[in-house]
Length: 105
Image (cartoon, rainbow, N blue to C red):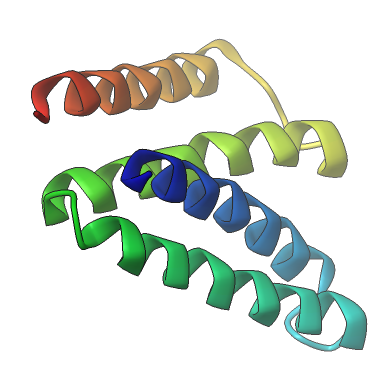
């Protein structure tokens, strides 16, 4: 279950990052509340996952899921630029997450 909790923590990180963007610097109420709510869920699930997974693995994978998810959300929801260098960078993050998972027993 630790891996599931870690995955969900990463998904919730993506949600709070997108909500934070929508909050416009915490000046909009609903996106601000959404940000804080999903931050709490994300950090809580990360903490639960860390009970059974190594710190380095947990944190690296959590950040990787959030970073790549935020990259995709930025492009799809906020019209952020997509170019070869950004795609390569995201692929490198994904590769690192996969390697970290493989290396953890």
